[in-house]
Length: 291
Ligand code: DGY
Image (cartoon, rainbow, N blue to C red; front, top):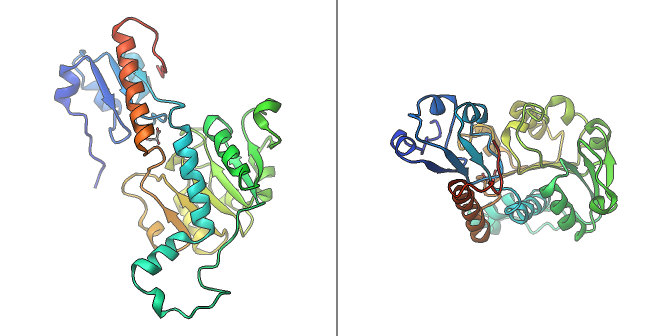
């Protein structure tokens, strides 16, 4: 089943402004079919890979997004995924919910024994706004931070984290790898069979950015064959129709793209989208313009 296109032709042809979410696929066909009335799209989301921005530009339609207001919520989900995949929370939760706990021998060396995160090394791919907040939260668990980014950060932003100029040299040093890059042609399949070979066997991969950064076949193969310890994933290729093999993996903790899903953050994102549209119609610069 394909994701639904929630923006109807009628809406986009009758209104001057549109609020979109990541469920709306605003591709080239969408822009080509417009009648010329639409002038601005206030997208609710920091990522806008669902919008064909080149077409928007060509049609002189402004697009805004909602950066920054979701940083804390996404960082919280990242920490949740780090903990859940290390402490086998998916398996543990299912054991209780399925009422199978009572059938297990209380073996303290085996039953749901996972890994501690305290003192471990977290490798962050993409040390932008969200990556930096994840690093701050992880420091509370005494995690050591290393990162790979296009540019080395200034010392006051780096806060003692170790910079690696390439993934190749960073990955072998990580217990955890968390990805915080936008979906671009540069980051497509950045997690692939070659990069996964560099992950230590005990390491855990976390993704709260976009599914397109991962080659599913490669990650699933690494998880199936225990080439890495586990993964915690909030985002997938082809959401919500993710590759079903993920569902069979005990060492993969999955969520339905809820990184920014808190009352506080979704309200802030929605208000920012509305305010961008208000700015546009009051001839003011947009608060967060994409194109
Ligand atoms: C974003 O803002 O891009 C989040 O992933 C929600 O879509």
